[in-house]
Image (cartoon, rainbow, N blue to C red; front, side, top):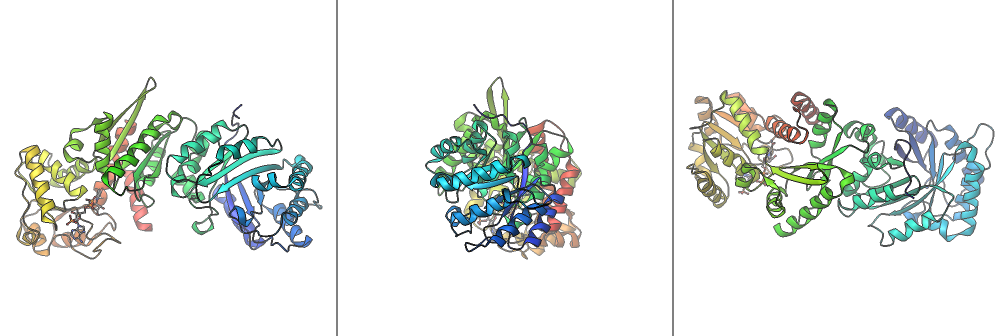
Length: 555
Ligand code: NAP
């Protein structure tokens, strides 16, 4: 019988103990940060040659903890640091549970590896006696199994073995997730568990299993106090879990969104969309969803398709849509064509989409894709121009990659004439020809050097020039001579780059007196269009801006 969760999923902060006073300070910080429990990992403190005095130190540490604690002494063969023998660590558990002295109390849980528990009758017997003796203090046994390399081939056998041991109060499984799809198996382990279960994916692909633990009724999730104190790869920080992902508001009905791309760990989108869900009291959460880049476009399409279809089809997840970023935007349109999903006309024309919307009715799912980058950019230009009409304007688009292609197409669809400049002129030529073919607008592609003498009503930088950590952070994407001319003709200059907020281009164009649009505004507007498509609610754009400004100020 699957176990039905009866209480909220706990947040547990693991603490590697090397010094008891520091560990207790961290436990107090964990409590103040909102955690429910700490795990004292005493593998380092409690060396193989430990004495009775060392065991007493551990017992005192447990007793002084400001939060209920799990006591763990993880051996090296299971990814920990303890290389002594089992008798010594069992004696430490006995001292902390059975040999308590006045004023001391037992840990809430002791964590023992399934492999050790299965291997030794003596250890099993003594561990059972420990939790039995401390039962009045609600002490319990967590039986655990870890694989830091991959999904264990014998996962089912391990789960069956755990279930055969009546003494365990909680089951814990953690393995390195190989892709997003491994999370689904971890969710099922929690759903099918016959008692409270912790099932976590290690590494960046496993973040979903950690954040969505309450959605599936997991016993607890681990979150680190600070970046460097994580005890397993991919553990979020407690502040990130509680504040960005709004962990306490996640429940069985929570809809799941995310940003699909590679890499996505630094994306600002989770901060924006989760803040938006919070602001509008929407029962939803938004996560980074890394899908590795394929070696070829075919490989890319295959892995994106396999993941998206599996996420959509796994009904308990309530996967309701995602932002899609580099390198999957073109794959998304190809997959949508193949799967018969609705494709918005702009995305079909551009050949790239950045948004997936999934809806469900009567047990059937429907998906549609669209591109919010291009209309967001055009909205920004219209705002700066002070008119809804762009017909007749000449728009210099610098760069013919994903952003350049989307903006040039959308400009043509809005009646403007795009002039595409690209280092690799063949790429600009191909784009201009595609625009002429699809829209009939006379798009052009002069040589890169001709930018110096060009005159446009609007300039848009769609290259990473000027981007922090990019190929030319100090570079000016548009030559100064063109900017001087732009200022004289009251032209608009827009940068799509938004890190930093004030790029060299934005700075120079402002100095010269041009009307300037920052990349951040486009970013906020494209996110707002996604949010509105998912929620059918007006996006809290001011909250989005606040979040982005704060994030950029921290960077
Ligand atoms: P992409 O597909 O990789 O295209 C990059 C483009 O930049 C290509 O045209 C490339 O020219 C050109 N380029 C690269 N390095 C250059 C250099 N050193 N000098 C001159 N040209 C260079 O990238 P993307 O997706 O279009 O993104 C481009 C920029 O747009 C990024 O910085 C991104 O941050 C920004 N963006 C912003 C938003 C927003 O919401 N604000 C949304 C999307 C994108 P070649 O063809 O000659 O290599």
